[in-house]
Every structure is written in structure tokens, then in C-alpha cells.
Image 1 (cartoon, helix red, strand yellow):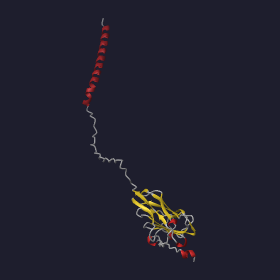
Image 2 (cartoon, helix red, strand yellow):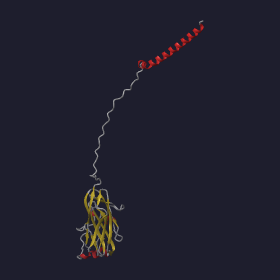
Image 3 (cartoon, helix red, strand yellow):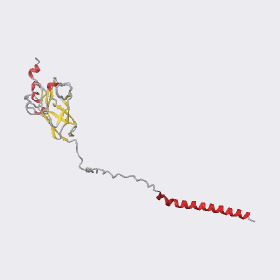
Image 4 (cartoon, one colour):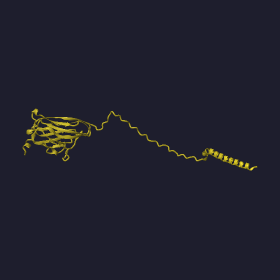
Length: 255
């Protein structure tokens, strides 16, 4: 058996749920406060709407003190956020390790997200190394409006631990990032809403009875009277003219 495993026993999770995630146990952090490191959370947006995605980064700074393992526990409100899975090939939900040196030995056991809102990651190195870089990234998607926070758990049996030589823990400071989630349907109070005018139903009109033209002759008599009188005058004139011609001829015949 490896001497390192005898000195620093590693306890891993057996399943994805919170009840089966790693129980780290107490680690002696020593008394030299000048060697304290930091485990810090940062987010690219702290004021979001439901459905928005927040990019979260975890960084570790050991202030020059070499460590061989870090065990991170990050807490979030599972009623407000869900973690977007970055490893679809492994069972459960995982976050992304961006540390180029430390490794996660088992994605399903040492990189877990519980349904209760706990992210736990165990990463180890074959050598003692100091750190001052980002180690983990993950995305949170907002699910419900409200005030919440993402925090580093630094107390209790499941707290975050930085483990150095001979299994001694390095003291550190952690932080939390407060976030505000707003509803995705925000109404601008400055814009009054115009009430909708109800549509008045159209009353069917009374059907129009088609008019039948009056063909009575009496209606046309006044129109024909002048015409008939004119014809009469023409006939009378022609008759008188003919009589006059006949009278002239008769006068010529008389001696």
C-alpha cells in the first residue's frame, strides 16, 4: 500500500445524493495563522431573472504553502438554482475541474451535486504544490425569484479542507456571494395599460324590399301630350299647304 494512503486516508462518496456524499472528518489546521489561505467564490452576475444562467468560479490561494489535496464543499439554495451538468457520461450531476494539475479520481464519487444544494469535489496531486488559481467552474440556472447566496462551507464535518503535508489542514478564509433573482415577467409601472373596448355586436338590418317599377300608361300621358300636339300641328300644316296648292291650280284653270 502507498505510504501516502496510510498517512492521508481518502473517504469518497458512494452515490449522488447528499446522504451518500463524502464525510471529510476533522482536519488539524495548525496554529500558524500567517500561512492561512483562501477559498473564494466569484460570479459573473448577481442580479438575474428566472431562467438566466450564472457562471460561478471557485479559486484557491494557499499563499505559498504546498498542499496535496483539497476537498471543497459549496452550498446553494436548490429551490432557487439548479446546477447544469457538465459530464453527461457520468451518473449524477458534475461540475468542471479547471485545475491543470490536481485531478478528480472518480467523477461519480468525488464530483457530486446533491438534490439538497451541496457541491462536493475532492481533487488530489501526487506532489505537494502551492495554489493561486481557479480550480472549479460551474453554471447555475435561476429557477425561482428571491434573495439567495452561494457560500463556501467552512465549518462542520463536511466543511471545505485544504490538506498539506502529513495530513495537516491549512487554515483558510471562505466567502459567500449574495444573489437576487427577479421574476421574468416584470411590468413597467410607468406605462399605463389601455383598457380594451368591448366589441358591440352588429344588429342585423331590416331587409330592403325591392321596388317594382310602375308600368301604368297614365304616368306617361303628360310626357306624350306635347309630342302629340306637335304631330297634329305638322299634319295640319301639311294639309293646309296642300289645300293652298290646290287652290292655286284651280285659279289658273279658270278663264
